[in-house]
Length: 201
Image (cartoon, rainbow, N blue to C red; front, top):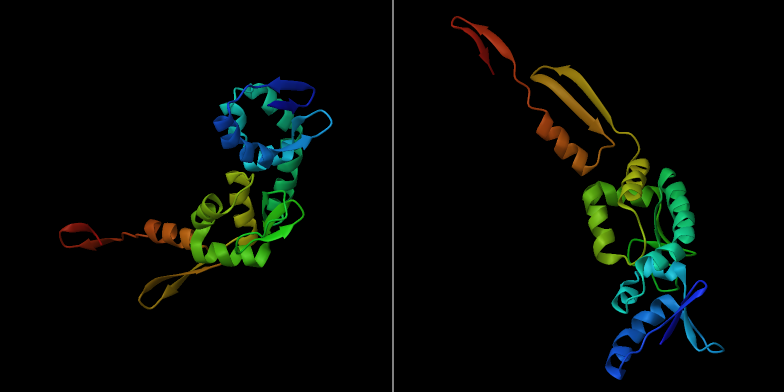
């Protein structure tokens, strides 16, 4: 089997069993050049789908990473641009139908603004990350997924007001995660002067 990565060609001898085991994985990240009779790495597909199969046949990691570097920079810039606008995006080139609740936009699976805010409101940021880990195949970064989720939900608002029965805390625009953290943090102790001294209540 011959595999071209940029200007380097790697030749690996595989028996029939090994060849049949890895051929499907090679097809996912390479295209076949019938003239040269070699597989040519597609850096975008390798970034999105993973390239563990190349490790398995002892292609040096630094060669593959070098081939992916330019694509990764470009994809990272686009993912960050979308995240800052409140859109969660996953680089996943292909034509396959995206899993719910994502939509396909070119080489990206996206979850935009209000729909992302709805999912974050239902599941929290950690729930969105779990959805990505379990149902989506592609390249994404956790820090940008968190940024997109925060941007989509927008800033939350907490209002404190005096109430007949005590202090009233009203929260708007917070995710379930944020509400749970607020609930954990909001234990208030008041020191009351009694005959025996100060007493915490």
